[in-house]
Image 1: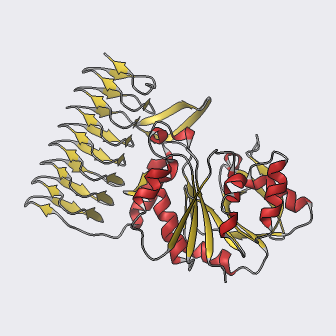
Image 2 (image 1 turned 30 degrees about the vertical axis):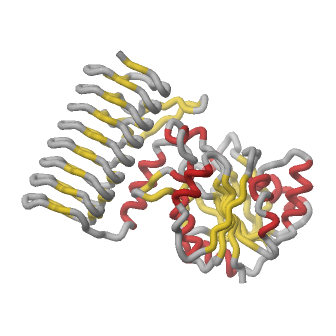
Image 3 (image 1 turned 60 degrees about the vertical axis):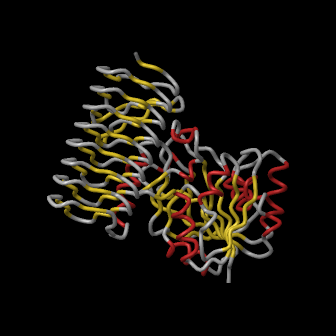
Length: 397
């Protein structure tokens, strides 16, 4: 029985800037929990006894957060240079003696799919998922449940299945990795393709649920899904005259003042102050120690820790980074947008608001157009309309 898993968590996530400028991608919050914590939870529930976590970029953030994580042994190894997934996996070699599974720390997967992979009798197995836009990922061509080819990010949409990057592998794969990396191939998909060409059979299993975060706006979509799976609880103080409908989680030492209207699913962290007369609408997560002042409205958004939202703000379909201070009458306009990111233009058909990096100071009566990205530590003066992306540490006067 397989008892060890390797979780790859060394990368930065450059396409998720500005949020990954100060934290690794795997620590981005979804429903007030880091992505990596969902991976840890699913792995532990599947029956794995030990996880070897490959860390690199901002590794201290990961190790500090999980120092008290219970019921599974955690071993950290470091990838000093982020050369690729195969190179990352190679760092775990000395801790592996038998067959094992490998997962990405920045994807959300259910424990049942991992358990199915563990029980599979094949020497090599991969979890795959049907996807409407396969060209963003590694496309898997399947024949009789075996992989005939993996094509990494093809220019055209071919096939319908993608690799989740979640494998069951024998210990002997390290020999193949060492051979391929010495020849300059550092992606795990390249190693698998070389094994296929040598005649190895790579079995495929369909993942039940799998989600990936590639761009900042993916946080909103994944948050919307995961917040529905959060167990309802109520702590803190709720004054008379508060209306709560649906599934709402309220953390300890949080105070909800009179006249607030909250419609779940909503998650509010510890030590927050909401209201009076604030409205929080579905699919919103609010991190710990956040203050939302009277007559403000937040819907379908990710608000990280230590954020201060002043009165009469309207935030919709947005991500607000840790420590932002937002002035009165701030508004995000949500709608369709074409966003330039990583030298690519992305057309978003679903409504999108703003994505704001941490520690920004936004003065009163600021309006942000749909899909605009504001970097971290920006300062925007009163009465401004933001019509283009703002780089980190910029001032708009």
